[in-house]
Each structure stands twice: as C-alpha cells, then as structure tokens.
Length: 346
Image (cartoon, rainbow, N blue to C red):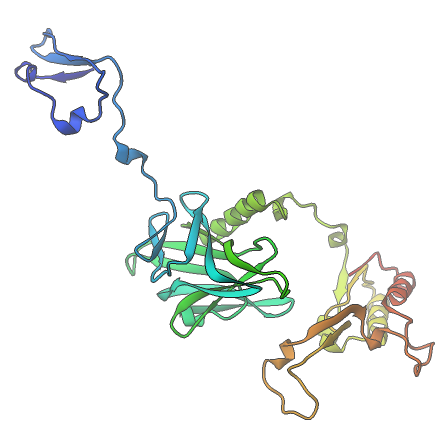
C-alpha cells in the first residue's frame, strides 16, 4: 500500500508508473485518518522490462561482447556466437566451401595485456605475453586477456579456450594485422566441413584463477568428455619416489643409461619406485631437418611420429649383441621392473 496526499487522489497516474500495471488492475483512493489518501492495488506491480534484460554474449555492429564487455572488434560476418550464460559462450565460424582445414578471422585484439599458452612442439606448451593480436603464436591452446576501463581501475579477464568440435581440433593464432584467428582441422583430407560453431569456449570474470577453474568445470559438464581434477582419484604412484629420464638424457635416453641411473639411485639409498621414460624412445622423423643442410632454429621441434613402436635404441637389430640390446621396449621394462623393484613405469 502506498500513501499519497489527498489532493493527488483524483489525479491520473503518470505513464511510467501506470506502465508497470496490467490493464486489469483496479486503482482507488479513500480517506485516511491522517489526512492522506491511499492507493490500493489488487495485484503487485509488474517489474519494468529493463529489470529482466541480461548481457548475454552477442555480436553486434562487428563487436563481440561478453557480459557487456567488448571483447573483439572488427568481427567478420561469418563468425557465430552461441551463448551458454551471461558470461560464457561458444564462438565459431562458417565458410562457403567445405575443407579439412580452415583458418577463420575472429576480430581485432589491440592494446590489451594478454597471456597465452601455445604448443611449441607436439607434446609441450610454454607461455608467451603480449599486448596485441600479432603476439599470439600459432597453436595457442589458451588465451587470457586483461581488460581495464581505466588505467588504474579494476581489471576483468576474458578467457579463450579452443576445444574439440566433433571431428575437428581447434587452436588460436594471431596475424600481422593484430587479428585473432581460429584454426580448425581434422587432419584427414577426407573429413571436411564448412562450419565449426563450437570451436572456442569464451568466458569472463574478475579473478583469473577462479575463471580458469570455473571454465573447466563448465566444459566438463557441457562436453562430457573429461573429468575435472577435483573429481579425479590421484594415482597410487604419487605416494612413491620416482625418476624421470628427461633432465638426465633429454632426447638421448637409452637402455644402458636408464639401467645405470636406476642402479645409482638404489646404491645411494633412494631407490625409485616409478620410472618415466621421457622423450627420446619414440620412432620419429623430422622432414625439416635433412642431412647436409644447415640447422634452422625451431626445426628441432618438427619431429612427427612414424609409428607407435619404439625406435632402434630400444629395439634389437641384427647387428647388435643380444646381451646388450633389449628385444623391445616391453621386454626392457619388464627387466628393469624385476631388477630394481619398480612398481610403476610410464
């Protein structure tokens, strides 16, 4: 019940007030003991429509906005956004022609602090910082932007996570025009598409750590293809002391070196209970490094798997002494487990 002066009792309600009421509401005034009239409504007010408006992710006038924050400008018409919540969405794009690999322009990134994790070899990622699209390397797997409305004001963070979309994998990259690009590829010329609508997950928040954690939980629920680490059971090997061969051998890991290392740890009173045979045992080839040609920096990361078998260092050949070379990786692992009491091997 709202009180109004009696002199206003016969006045019509103004438009903004009456617009909150349905046509069927009855309004009347009556005398009140203190010289006031009263307005009685049979029903409560309807909330103004603006109170129901939300800032769902949207592309408008070439600008991608997430939770009301401008995220990308100069967004092409073929870019598509699929909202999940006010602060999150999937971003993808369409093409006029089907192909097994597409590179789509998503929009401009300029004058904003950014952090990205990019895959600089098949199985390894490292970070890079920058402030524009051209600072984003190929094979970027995570992109975090720091946005501020004022130089000394609070920051908000926008996260881009490329994900699997059907049979296509995704990654991000920048170009010399400071545009963010999306690369989607199947790896098979026979598997083609003309669109990838859910290739990148985008989310925003005020705390980068909470944002990452929340985003992974959202993707876990939506995709159903993985489990968040909080719900995973820790492997039993973490209760034991172990050894990884990388820092000792790098790519030069070999059976005899592994035996010598395990023996040294045992004789020193700290026997390893699990072993990680790191990079260097795989059967690979590198088309970017050819015999007789000068070395090119970065080409060492261009190796590709030839097969899922071990390389010659871990495989017996006709010219080797059978007592020195293992017949294969499986037999070698069985031998060192029994000799040195290993519980786990990876």
